[in-house]
Length: 150
Image 1 (tube, rainbow, N blue to C red):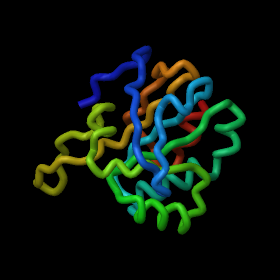
Image 2: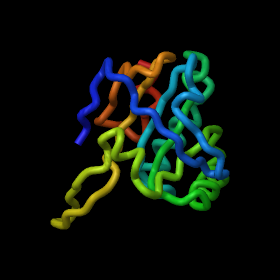
Image 3: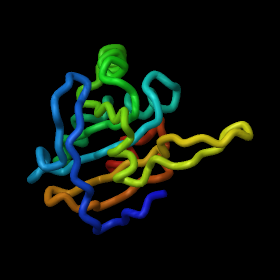
Image 4: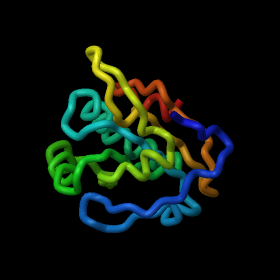
């Protein structure tokens, strides 16, 4: 699972957002980044988390943070999710799970007695130099922005 820790250099990446644009960690050099991984668009917990970040986007930007979401959903799914909930930040379509694997959040999970692989909901706060300043692995989906701002 997550082998990254506070103080580690965040793994670099290049991946497509909902519009097919390539986004890289280096695009955020000199800026702070909230990089959040979530399992699936339009599910209750993921929607609550995205809306919490949406509602506090200005407060996070006021502290110098940009927001970037990542899930294995397709670009088209992300476009619909962003439109439906008016999300003001990009979402990465990590369909091959390479970004989730690089950050150690693609792991074996269990639900209702079944074992499967999926995203372990995790948020990384990355500083302006690309260093991980905090990892939140116990995400409170409804109050996630408050977790980040505290």
